[in-house]
Image (tube, rainbow, N blue to C red; front, side, top):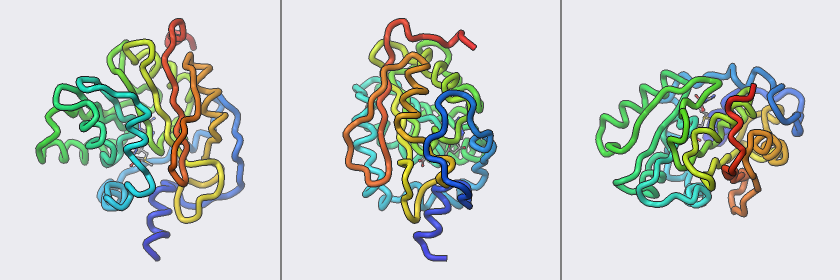
Length: 238
Ligand SMILES: C[S@@+](CC[C@H](N)C(=O)[O-])C[C@H]1O[C@@H](n2cnc3c(N)ncnc32)[C@H](O)[C@@H]1O
């Protein structure tokens, strides 16, 4: 199999495409397959996911800029996977800041723990989170990013409410970066798993955020910046 095809399958996370539905309904009535997909082999993904070549098209500096981080801030990476974004987040928050690497998958957590034990990640906390809860509690982080992961989460509006509650201040940001809802040959999830930006924005606004599509130059992704606003904390709602 050609390298590009391998990379495509890896970033698809799920092989096969089936029918194409680019505009799924907003809210919580999502396909449970999003939640069912597992990433149990970090070693198989790491060389591609963590490669320097990825920076050319993933443009992590634009993703991190969208978070509006200051030195000393606490940032969480939801669905951290093999830790691609962690170094970029560490650079943005500096040695006084903190980075949370969250993932549901035990194999990913083990992989991240091993990276941490290799040294240099003193201000990184690796934490297993739940499928339906980022586990941030109340007002604990300044910003949250999720890269290539939002489409894997079921019950997204309820989940986003918990992220809203986890942000410590009004103005705190939740940044969603995901594949566009158009074919991106060789990379990305099957069309039926993709979420159009307007769908994501509706989910985030239903959770109490103000959300907009950011300007960016990523060839296959959109960046949505959701900002915590007063009165939008609806975590206790069903
Ligand atoms: C396609 S990978 C992306 C990994 C990384 N963000 C990247 O772009 O390299 C999706 C990751 O999200 C994790 N994941 C899926 N559902 C999740 C959830 N509800 N909460 C946290 N992580 C989740 C998976 O275990 C997997 O590691």
